[in-house]
Amino acid sequence: MEKKAILLVTFGTSKPEAKKAFENIEKLTRERFPDTEIRWGFTSNMIRKKLLKQGEVTYSPQMALAKLSEDGFTHVAVQSLHTINGVEFDKLQAVVTKATTHPALFSQITLGDPLLSSHVTTEQVMHHLLAEIPAERSADDAVIVMGHGTEHHFADLIYTATAAILNGIDPRAYLGTVEGYNTIDRILEKCKKDQIKKAYLIPFMSVAGDHAQNDLAGDDDDSWKSILQSEGIECSVIMKGTAEFDSIVGVWLDHLETAWNELNTAE
Ligand code: CO
Image 1: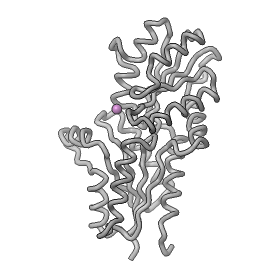
Image 2: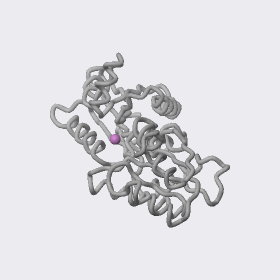
Image 3: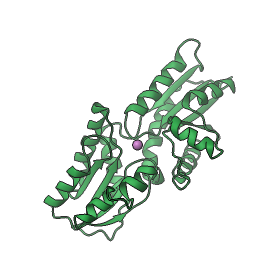
Image 4: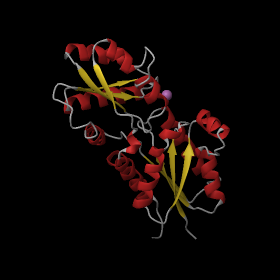
């Protein structure tokens, strides 16, 4: 007998207030795939340990897949809730591949793309993100987007491409990253060149967790907000993760639908 399930996989967060992003994804996934078993996997063991201390038991993707197999599921569509195909996505891909090797855990398992899967989706996502900037933004105001960035050099180029796409859509919108190449110094240079006086700051991560709360909007001298303000740029922060925006979750769910449709079942 065939039994199908969805496994949603995220890096995870230990910030309770950031969890509403995951609740939103789960709600929208249920709407798109009614009466379907939906489970979660967290790729960050550090986060999983923190959550365990708070009394919350979570599964790694490996554990979640083993449990699904044990529970008799035969077909699983795994959806990455990562932003790019970087280190975390690579790890997930390895786990999915391993589940297909002998003895295979399922009749079939498929994996959906992370958020930025092509120039077309990246353009869509940047339009969706800009739509979340308050309407009172004037034509002179900047939008500064904080991506994660990565020391994985190939994958970090995705952020450079995304920054170019964003700036092409809106010449006063800049995307920088916490890690990797396009750091705040480079963004600040651009703001100075364009004589920016006011900026809307928004994270570009699935949840508004530690990076958004501290590196972007924290009160320490080295937060982006403090750095920009010390240069005379007034800052207004939008403290929301991309998974709180239904339009952006929709892009992830389109990828899940592709993975779901790839499952060869009798239905
Ligand atoms: Co990080």
